[in-house]
Structures are given as C-alpha cells and as structure tokens.
Length: 282
Ligand code: AMP
Image (cartoon, rainbow, N blue to C red; front, side, top):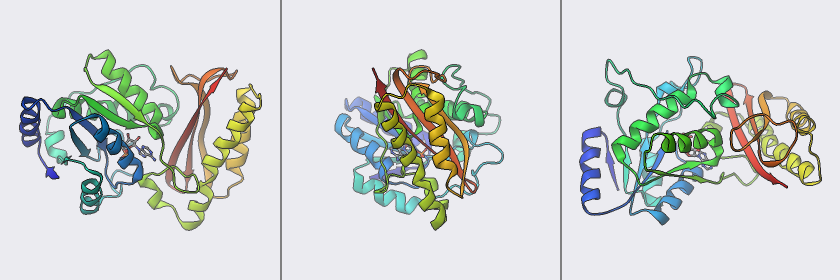
C-alpha cells in the first residue's frame, strides 16, 4: 500500500492504472478509520482492481461552530488499518493542494439537500458535493463507495453523478454498528462513558419504531413522537431532528407508505450523531 500526498502524483498513478486497463474503486473518507469505513473497502475490493481510499478533512463541509479543528486525526493508525483491509493507495492531499488560494468553484445539488441535515447544516452538502466532485475528477473511479450511515449524502452524490454524466457508479453500503447497535462513527470518540451508554437509544428507538410500523402503524407523527420520547428520556440527549421521509426525494411524510427512511440527528453534549433505518411498507 502506498500513501500519495499530492494531486499530481495521484493523477500519474491513475493514468498508469487506466493504461493497464485496471478498474478503480474510490472510498472517500475523513479518516480516523473504523469498521464502517472498512466495510466500504471490502465492497470495493470485490468489484474493482485497485482500491483508492481518500483521507481528507474537508473544511468546506463544516459550519463555523462545528468540529473541523478538533476532528480526530491519526494517519499512522489509519494507514495500518487500511493496509490490513487491502487498500492499495491512500490519497492524502493537503488543504492547499485541494483549495489553493483563489479557489472559486462549488457544486450545488438542488434536490435531496433541503431537508434533514441540509436544513440544520447550511452549506454542508455544497461542501460535500464540491470535494467529492474534485476527488472524482482526480481519481477517476469506475465505482465510488458511500455509507448508508450518511444516507442523504450518498443519495445526493448518486444524483450528482447522474445529473453531471460522471459515468461513475455510486454504491451505498449498509451501516456497520457496534455490538450494542450504535452506528460506528469517528465522532463516537468524543462521547463520555455516560453519553456512550445513552447513545444506544438512537438505534433502540429506530428499531422500536420499525416494530410499530411492521405492526401496522401508518401515522408518521405518532411514530416520530415515540422515537422522540424514547430519546428524550436519556439525560444527555438533545434532539436536532427525528424525521420520517420517503427514500426517493427525502420529503417529510404524513402517511407511512412505500420505502421510507426514519432518520435522527441527536446531540450528546457537543457531539452530533446521526442514524437511520429504511423500511419497505406495502
Ligand atoms: P466519514 O469519514 O465519516 O466522512 O465517512 C466516510 C464514509 O464512510 C462515508 O461514505 C460514510 O457514510 C461511511 N461510513 C461512516 N460510518 C459508517 C458506518 N458505521 N457504516 C457504514 N459506512 C459508514
């Protein structure tokens, strides 16, 4: 495995791989790797010849009051995990290489981004769409891998790739969870012991809602209220949103029908965690 730290060297590598007729899989990350990231690598290794993992903490997608400065970083550890998982190249560009002085071009996806995290994090998805476009142009992958954990992000990228004729297949990989159900996230490291215990309520409340829906509940408001009540019962939790949406346009639903997603964003102190489940309702 090699680590490539600048764009021009990455481009040279990509040219050589393309000449050899190799397919490229890209796994974009912000590092501080866990099993969730590695599940994307595993999928990439199945379908493509060369697996490139990018590690770049993208300031454009963080709000002014968010955790860009203190986002966890550990390249050495990431390199070990990535090597073991079979990553061929870590692409680890510098901030200056990606956004040189005078940088002025941004990508906005005007559907799928208004609700959920788009509502509470203005500019976030513009930042994500911009960096992912740049990574796509640099790495030129045949397939790119995203996690269902960030469902809205993954659907937005798929739409962007299609709208802009990028000729890249966007694969969405299921959420990897700790044994107790908490979705793995680099941000879980911020949680105190008490918060970590409370955070299990996210998955528990989603699973409880799933049971309600499977037992016939079709009123979205009632399901949302049940999830909210369960989360509120945890002392350290502060809800940002609990939403029930369709999985095509991510619009709020009143009646539960078709394929739906139940998505939550909850703060534990300053740590913002998200989770979701999708359910097919006939
Ligand atoms: P991040 O480094 O948090 O930006 O995540 C990089 C990629 O890994 C994104 O596509 C995420 O959706 C995905 N990812 C993060 N956590 C998980 C998880 N627990 N299970 C599956 N994929 C994940």
